[in-house]
Amino acid sequence: MAGVTVGELVRALDSTVLEALGGVEVTVASVALVEAADLVGDGSGADLHLHVGVSAEQTARWLAGAGHRPRAVMTKVAAEPVRAAARDAGVALVAVHPQARWDHLLPMVQGVLDRSRRRACDPELAGTDLFDLAQAVARDAGGMVSIEDAQSRVLAYSASDDSADELRTLSILGRQGPPDYLRALRDWGVFDRLRSGDEVVDVPAHDRLGTRRRLVVSIRQPPTYLGSIWVQQGDKPFTAEAEEVLRGAAAIAARTILRDLEAPSTEAVLIQRLFGARGGGVDAPSLAGALNLPHTGRAAVVGFAAETPGVAPVRNTLRLLASAFRRDSLVTVIGDRAYLLLPGYTTAEAVTAWTRHLVDEFESTRATRLRAAIALPVPDLAHVATARTEVDRVLDATPAHTRVTTLAESRTAVLLGEILDLLATRPDLHDPRLTTLAAYDRDHATDLVHSTHTHLTHHGDTRAAATDLTVHPNTLRYRLRRAEQITGLTLADPGDRLLLELQLALLGRARG
Image 1: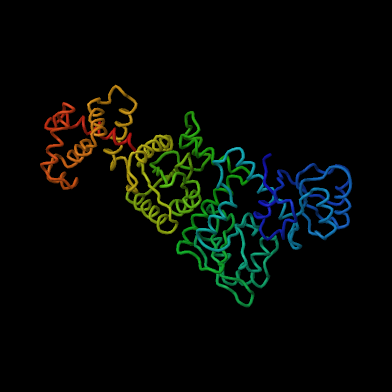
Image 2: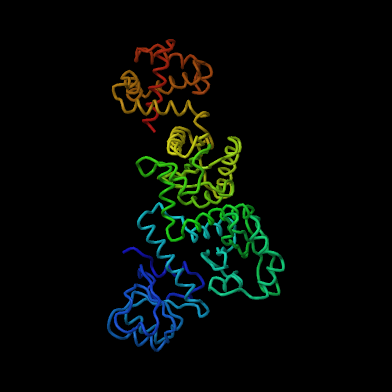
């Protein structure tokens, strides 16, 4: 059954609920507001009921009666008789904060359930809504996050802790903040600055009103003001990159709000199609229109691979930082790699420098080692899928210590790797003479294959190769002569050397 457990729902709703009184593993997939008059008969048929204006006595009597019962009930009157009746009926019970507004709580619950349905249909769509964005900002900027629309209604928020002030608690409950504080925000010009620009505004703590320091940035699609992102400071200071994270988050939130919060999966599918992940041709003009991107003009594509396979956990941070660099950037995860599109980039040098900084930042601040490959210039959106293939070629062929590169910089490694891939699929191109040499080593406990490879690596410099092998040069000369006798190859012959190097590379790959 698609849906979320009561425990997951309670965690997502944060301080709007007080606690789950049993049944945390119960799964719910639908919700309905229920008044006293609706308790007659079989009710709405929804898995979860939000009891609005229903007294404790009415709730307890209804739970003890016959007929259809939902899987779970949310109520503000969770007295002991109600709890006992819920236990007897096998219904999960959730105590809602007395000050929570039902008209605020209902869309929040619906949002959590909708997100669950989208993820059940396509796990790749995780990380695509405002709740995920709020959690990512809280982690990367430090503090507690709330995302509000243009009318200051809370759309999403991150988890709170004991350092949450009254203003945050009231806003999550759907209540207006203290009038004196709102007046102070107006006096400080905070609202005017949010509606007129993209700056991150630092709002100081107000001891008399009991509010903590906040950072806030507007969500705008010029000239339209769409809302704001607030971060309340907790017991620890904000991170050094908090302002950059907020700017990136504002760009993502603007796109998400404009493209219909109820169906973010549409954008995710379109982005994956743009990168060639869902088969069929790409109608670049249509995709450009749907994603609000320029169809023509150069772009850059960057692919990311993690040292530990799988980059999904860093997707949101990539989106934040990329959107701070380019507001119209797009990020998707396909398999074990993340891909980034930067439309209308300024210069190749700027993209490369930013990518190096991003890779370094992930390693230094998040203990995550990434490798990146850049494809540029990409002529237009119709070539994005081809560019993704190019960065995959580079990531497949380059070693772990190569952190940021391009096909032009790594062409030798890429082409050699692809030649070896081709040889690996053609057993008829495997030289049996090298197999014979490897068998001789195995049967006689010698080291002729490695000695020959080291000699070739040092371009025929016997003394340098002998030093590397920690043997006398004459010992190495003897091993090379023996290898020539066994294989019939001549190390002085350029053709034999080239063939031998390819076959040795193929053997080394097979050995892992």
